[in-house]
Length: 408
Image 1 (tube, rainbow, N blue to C red):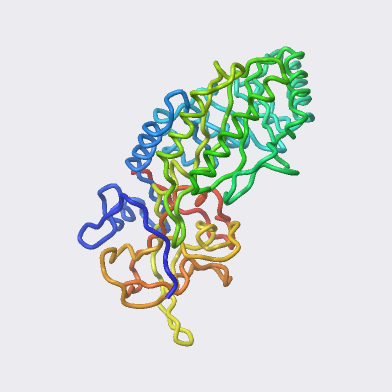
Image 2 (cartoon, helix red, strand yellow):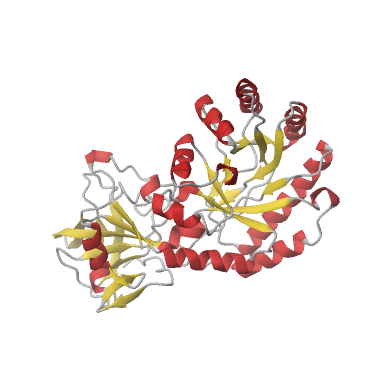
């Protein structure tokens, strides 16, 4: 049998069935009216935010990266939990505004911003994290036409990356940000145009579990921000240190030592150079805030045996959980944490693969893993589904459509 990933803390059983936020999985499915279903636990998100607040230095603000999960009730809940919101499209700006969130709390990053997106953000008072000189020129021209002073920051492409990260966002040639050596000249242009300069956004990588690597990257980020500020000749108003905090998905993954990250960052911030003495710092996190707070529930619609191998066929699949299927940046497919929700505390009885309803061999949620015997009608739970599940999967593939979503 192939091992399954570790089930996150905070989940238990009621009458032998998986419980989420104190409610049985079958009860939540009945409430939603159907499967497949994403369930997000407000309590687990609140716990994670509290852990971060306790571990990080008090001067570090906490931002939520909306791309991880833009579910409207979740965004509304986040309003009172985090200090800011980071978006990556005009569509996300509309979602944020629909949730009643003050645009002054929003920053907008991402390459390829369209003129209409730039205009909407500038008019609303959103901070733009500029990704190139060309984008800066377009933003300044739009602001001039609108008669608005734009809030502009520069996304820096650093000369380093986050070691051990799942996705490297900095170091070398990248579509993200402005190469560090070109940043001072661009900031000079922004200042000369009379824009409201907001500082730097420096994001080196994501999904890292190595606390030492994260601490080292944060130290390099702060040093880079100080050097660029000296070259600009202006104190730095704000520095987004990026994120990169990972969560365990696969067998053998060890949770991030958050206390170690916070302690190292506290030491670094206690020794800031003059250029950064008044700088406001923030951390931008998405997956780490909501990933482990989500569960994907899908119902078994068929049980079959082929050449001696058992398949549990569900009404869900990669169209909702692309990452769990191994088709979202994974080189070697490994099993996410998956369980039979209907028999959550039962012992392993058989080896089976959990597959979806799509007519492709890529649609596999668990590969040759150990489970209690499951039958048609039972519910399967895929954990770590709170981030990059519904928002990063091809829901319309084969006309399947989106899953239901609940915040409980």
